[in-house]
Image (cartoon, rainbow, N blue to C red; front, side, top):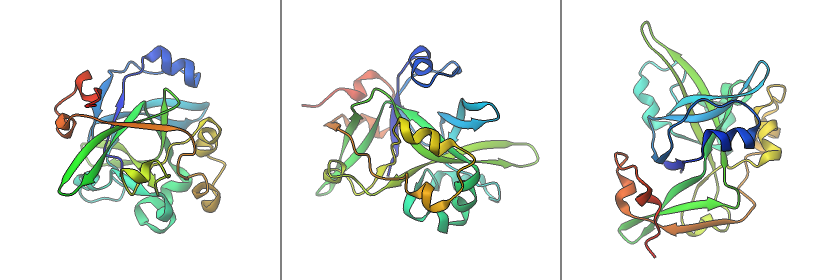
Length: 217
């Protein structure tokens, strides 16, 4: 799964990478579910940036608390699940990060690791939806996961889908609606990754400082 990540890039770095205007952001060393996450969606005039609440609340949900159970979606079965099937063709997004955390089980202990890629910025494939009640609106998202590549398999049995530049545009392209084509994009990351153990302080979402990304070794 993907349950925590970081985003510390500046507005200027983001705009240089994606070529669009970004809102002001506050960096975080411990982005957690239920928080607003910086995301990209397809707009009328191309890609646009904004914030989505992490933890998908489907438009048809009776209780918004379902979002706590839907921070991730399995890529292999998106077109089989009622919560995701409609969104696969209509509401795809990218969630921006610069690293993510994963926990490796060793006996009865789970050790947190910070995972980075050869690129400074990461885009996770995601889905979004809009939920409304009489007095509230929530625009939320989920991060799609897949089987691990050989590197991540040493840490966990799932990993987030990370899309490179070539597949970003395809994922956000509203004209692409073929389920098999879209699912064919949701593959394990092919490029170099690195990981190192970090403090268990990251387990608490209230902790948010540069100390969280310091290596224990």
